[in-house]
Amino acid sequence: MKFDNDKFDGVFPRRKPWFIMLVVVAIVGIPVGLWLMYRGKAGSSADNAGSAALPVAVPVVATAPPFTPPLPAVRPVVVARPAEEAVRPSAPPPPAAAQPVAVRAGSSTVVPVPGITAEEVRNVLSKGQALEDKGAMLEAGKAYVDAIASCTDERLLAALEERLGKANVGLLLSRQKMPGKVEYVVKANDAVEKIARKNKTTTELVSRINGLGSKGIIRNGQSLTVFTGQWSIAISKSRFELVLELNGAFFKRYEVCVGPGAKTPAGPYVITSREIDPTWWPEGQGPIPPGDKKNPLGTRWMAIKDKQNPAGDKRGLGIHGTTDDSSIGKALSAGCIRMRNSDVEELHMLVPLSTPVVIAE
Image (cartoon, rainbow, N blue to C red):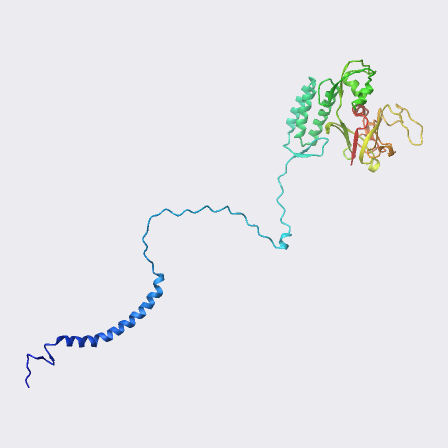
């Protein structure tokens, strides 16, 4: 059989090649398309799930950093402890370094101060003596007071106080000016005793400061120097000492004898009487005159009574001299305060009636 070559090229007519291509595409393309669709759906699910994690390019624009206000100061936070912890005692703080202290004579105030050396004390004593020799008692006393304020050594302190007491008495008995001294012009009908009573001082002190002698003769219009300071006495039984204070500050220290145990009762007293060359009236015996060896009162007597009830105090206590200096510094009296005669004469000249006295253990 013979085919016409113009109409057919093999099986298909030569004039329709697109049909052959369509068939081939259908046979190959349909399966491939289905496979691609399946892969496309699976891939789109994965892409959607991970798209948030993918970095996105953002254009960078140079701008000034935003203003940030400063943060407020942070306060400490107090956390309440449990009750059992709150009451638990904390460990004690470490002890502070020891610091020297000084107790100003005649006072109970303790003040931390730098200690003065022994060499410095010797220099002060030498300087003070030179001032005393020139009659500059006020300047000498100031030098001693300054040294006492920074002295912590008992032995050196005693030496300074002894010199200060001497300078204080020297200044008081002179005509030199000092706090407490005032001018008094004698009026008609005045007497030394009257002037002393009016100014709450003693006749002996007025006479001694003004050089009036034992007779105390004065004249109308005469100018006198009168001392008006306030005295007080503090007695320590354990230290066997009597401290005389002027306006609350140390003036002079004296060594004394007291009674053993409770024979010298502690407490506040007041001076109610003063005598020169006292007579002793022992219980159950007759009077023993001054100067008699059996009279233990020495040359001066100052009766002290309970400050709260002086009229009802019948104990017969007093501050007096002694005929036995060896008892000074010991507990040997029957209850009174004994002093050396020279010391009690000085004290008697200085302190008037109503001077307060405190006896401490």
